[in-house]
Length: 96
Image 1 (tube, helix red, strand yellow):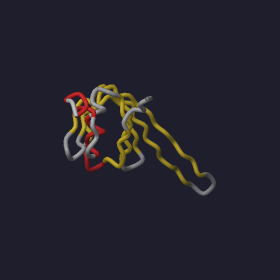
Image 2 (image 1 turned 90 degrees about the vertical axis):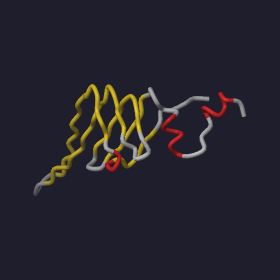
Image 3 (image 1 turned 45 degrees about the horizontal axis):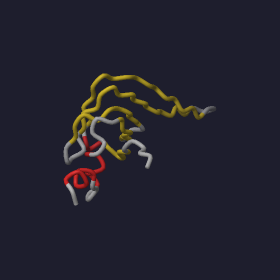
C-alpha cells in the first residue's frame, strides 16, 4: 500500500470521521437535536468542534386536542459538541 492509499484506508470507525475533516457532516444528538456543520476537530470520545453549524431542535407539544411537532432552527458560527451526547455521525456523501 502506498502512503496515499494508507491515508484513505478505513480500518476502524473513527477513520471515517478522520476522512471527513474540513467537510460538512451530520450529527444526531440526544434530546432530538440535529447538527449539520463543518468538522474542524474531534477526539476518540467524539468531542467535536464544528463550524458554520445549523442546529435543528424538534420538540413535541401534546395537549388534550393536538399532537404538534415543533422544529426550531438556528445557525451557530462555532460549536463544541460533547461526545457523550452524540448518537450518530454521518460523513458527507461521496460519489465514486
